[in-house]
Length: 85
Image (tube, rainbow, N blue to C red; front, side, top):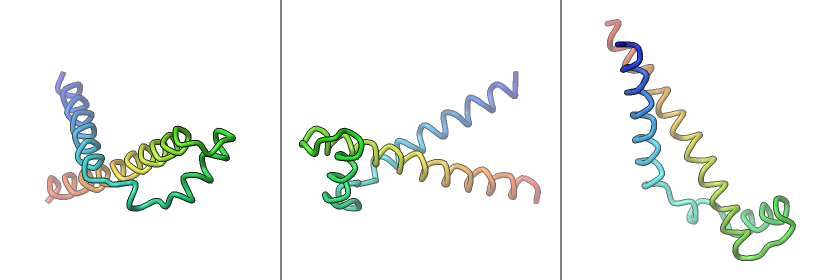
C-alpha cells in the first residue's frame, strides 16, 4: 500500500511540476517564426496559420516534457542523496 502511495505522489509531483514549467515557459520568445513555419511545412505540407500554431504547440509540448523530466530526475536524485546522508 505504501508503495502505491509513493507512486501516486511521484505522479502527482510530476504533473504539478509540468504545470509550473509550462506556465513559466514562453515558446514564442524562444522559437522563431521561421522554424515553426518550416516545421509546419514538413509536418502538414502547408504553412497556414493553424498549422504554424500546431507546430508551436508540438514544440511547446515536447520542450515541456523534456524540461520537466530533467528537473524531476534532478529533484529525485537530490532527495535520495539527502535521505542517504
